Image (cartoon, rainbow, N blue to C red; front, side, top):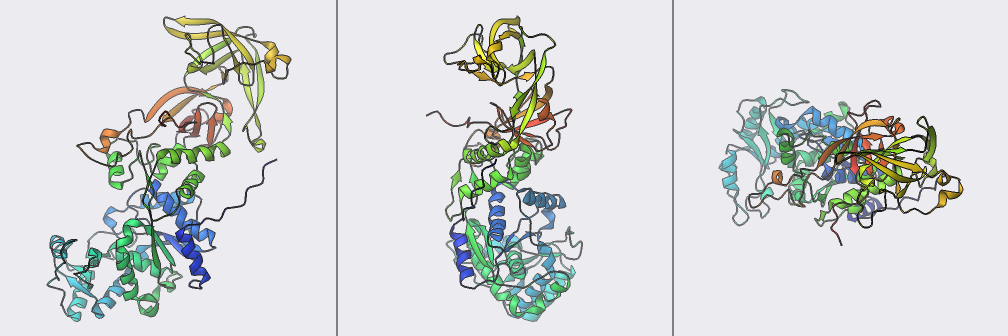
Length: 576
């Protein structure tokens, strides 16, 4: 009988406390969050924390959470990424309340731009990108006003409408907010709101040739969707004044003419004034999470695609066999704070082990086989032995494992000249075969220096249930029936980089120079028949070897393929 699940522990961090306080004060009838990725690449480990936070808060407070694609830069975006992101969110165990795109609101953004022009808070600027940077100043020098800042409202409206109509080439003009070129926050020095890009969009086609800038579109999307708490990572803290400026000055709630068409198109929009709150991102050593560098590794063939099990992408982590519950545990363990920190990769691996130890059934496999022949059993001997599928949970049930005269054991479980402290099989020595009994090595058959077979005898009195079964033997090893074991491809994955800080390029060293040549080793081994029958993505523990997963793409019952998810113990830990 299974143990009753422990009651859920209430999570508490500064963001959740803000949410509780806001609800208690009656600021919101219902919490609404969003996860707003740009579909210009695959999600990675860092995004998992944001997904768990946004969707988790929506779930914990009986609120809502949207998935919104920030598709304002069509030159870099692809429907392939959209579908992968949706799959990743669902794999992590979450479902969105509404699926939205920033492009759903392009007309609202445009109408808001016209409003800002009429209010004297935006102007059309003819400066080139290089000139804008020159005029902006720096952290120690104020910026200078654009010579086009004083254009009349009517001229700005005319130019903005002609920008939309496609009269001007890429980069010829921008719509800029009129804020403060002397601001200590460079983001407020008349930032661009729209730029010209004659690029077809995946959702809107050729309808638009001007596209909103991220800070403007993100803030207004949150307002249009009725988001109450806009959660983002710390690098956006300096952008919060621009976020608030956009929300306050467009003021959707009091200007329904800017958005009233949306509900008629099926969008249940009730604009709000969202609150942006920043938190520290998830940083893990021994990995790289720059989209640019990940793309380079894929395009240069340094890895085998975005879902290579060594990649920190959620697609790669999933293919390697990491359970989604391990990522949720990692997010909880790392916590939510304002303090940036670097998490050791072993913390992530520990979350995987902890999760898989509870979830994964046990099976036997032999990675580097050597044959063991039990000489005192008949050649035709065959029987089925019963094994528990999990040593700590009877609900997993049992399975039958075939046993015969000829077995496969791990090569490292035999040592012809034993080292000190070696307690497995040696010439003339004894070892216990898991679930079978005690065998003694009586002969080592070799071809040159290569061991071909180990001939052993089985103590019949040491079989399960017999008087000699409790005889003390220090070593116990696993095995497979050579007649019944299924040949298997086993991919032994390890960390992709050999140093903790591969993302830091210095002294001529780049992340390419830090790649681990032993990050994958492919061997041909054997598994018991029931393991071969597992469905793709099934996670298991191969006893004494580690946690593995049936590959989601390549695994077949007649040609099984298993990926090592993580070793049983931290092999990277420094000796005490």
